[in-house]
Length: 265
Ligand code: NDP
Image (cartoon, rainbow, N blue to C red; front, side, top):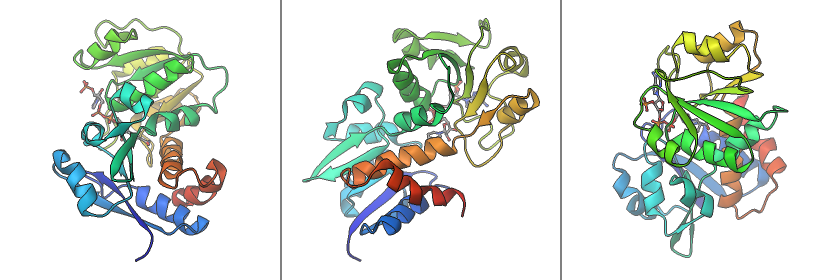
């Protein structure tokens, strides 16, 4: 095979749409590249595995985004700030790390107008990078999580944080599920009573989970609210990663034209 090799590293990784997305864009744009999936069990082996497989670039998914961060020789300033890398590109033997989840999410929610205050349900890695970019863009982000542990770092960074026990609801323009509740179970990200206190006054509800209607989005629909799942976030983070993989050779819209077919096949 000629051309450059790319992959997604994760565990599990069999469900990932990234190989389809990137291969459609390579083919559609005539770029000689091939994108595979690789189940990486030990995150500390990320760098040696990357070079052993002769790769040019990778995306990294759960649970290796922090290992990806430490594997990089050069970090993009935003990836450094949020401590998580989901895209790596090799240049002259060095690994360059980027975070495309957060700008992908920002673009996905920019379709909602007149949004200022948002409520995040969840305080994991995705909440960390997306809350940082939203704040940089002028949004006011409140974080609500079921347990206190992960809230500490948000508190230190000056976000308003709550657990279910001490939450006092306000009016939020968007209520966003940033947890994995609903991914492989039928759980809501917070007790229904809490959700019933914030969804009715919101403009819309968003979930980062894609490919299914989560219990959270079902509840939002029952309240008559517009909803949005995580498909656009996935698509947009992939397009931004593709721009890095191909050294900004193609425009966002040209990549989108091909990559978005992965969601209709
Ligand atoms: P983490 O493991 O870092 O964090 C998980 C978060 O979910 C924690 O806040 C945890 O709370 C909370 N949580 C998990 N289960 C429940 C539950 N049953 N009830 C309430 N809270 C719960 O995960 P990530 O941040 O990496 O990922 C979060 C989600 O984002 C996943 O669903 C993932 O698929 C999705 N995602 C989507 C992307 C896209 O492109 N669309 C890109 C990246 C991620 P606690 O602290 O109490 O444990």
